Image 1 (cartoon, one colour):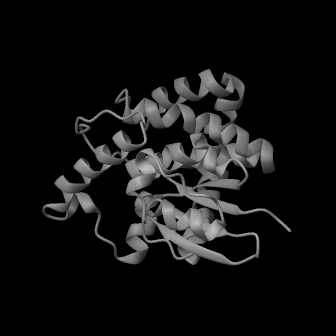
Image 2: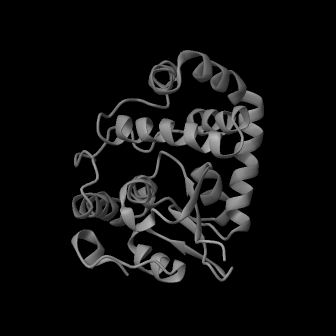
Image 3: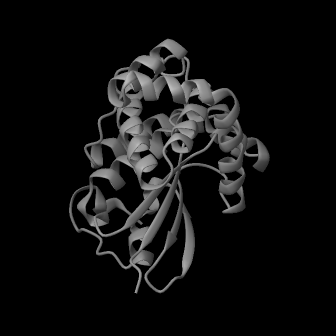
Length: 223
């Protein structure tokens, strides 16, 4: 019988996608789960769904800034609590480059490269406030974790191949029902697939996958 499988759609612009990614990468509850990370453009999903960005909704803009900090504290996720200047940044170059990276290295090798990149990009923006959407900054960060050659190749491919794959990935997320991030597609050992939205629904994700939900720390706040 196959083990549990989970797909997480990501865009570095989303603090909650970052938190979901961090938990999946670091919490031992998911060590027996096959996880695939898929770069998408959140702005494209929001537009296609007619979904108003939270930052443009009165009162919700302030609430989400508090909520992201709550979850970061509960799970000890590195995140600056101060509001970031210029949020949200346009992440098209980042996400196209990450897509290009998965073209250069298909399959599990590409997932490994993608995780190295995300492991560096998320804290660079959410902790250090680096302008990761600027070409020079992105090249420097990726060059350090991937090597200058791979980083250069991926950024060179971003404008065409990366752009095309980002569109395909975003369409795939929409087909899977996404209207925001984090969006999970979870398949349990019996082959049943369900989708979930929000870092606060990790409890339901683990229940569906047949994983034992911890009874300590941030997990006590999970649905």
